[in-house]
Length: 270
Image (cartoon, rainbow, N blue to C red; front, side):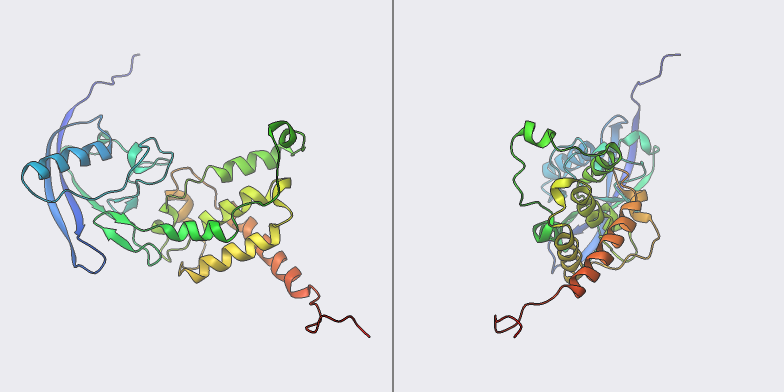
């Protein structure tokens, strides 16, 4: 049987959060969107609505986007109460209108988290993630050219897990889905990605302590193991990485506490 990929026309009402800036009051505004192609992506539909608003002399809806291929994680919207919309394992830009019914009211709002301050409308500032990466999400050892890197043996299970963790695109859906606005899944993915590889071992303890410390400093909430984060993740990052990071953090904390400190005066024992 040949699948029917023909498009259908539908009309919906967009109930969009509008807010001119972080200090301005915000409210939901309804916009009719008529005669849409069901094969449009959600962002293409927002483009159509913005074209109409521009023609009418109204301020277009501000939303963030870049690759529109589910790679960059920029297109972060909460659609009908769910980060990225009704699909599973996809970003907002991969959500298509065929996921909705003709006549639906679609509520669109920004990711809500204290650590993600609102910029305008559907755009939030997620630079807190950048600060967490800067705190330790890197390696300082030189890996050399590709042949040098390939000469370091990595067990297949570890390589597979590292690749799974590296799939994280840093979109922030895990934070938006969590009732505590926790960034544990994001941080766990970034910590595990490097902690599973030989090149990441020299700074393993320092990395997990620094990144978790920065996460707490920036005001993200605590993890209470509801696993909404992994359910909303567009790359289906497993919450098992959180347990892995917790073990690394505990071990690093113990080693740090037991590490001998140098004499304050710089002299040796007499």
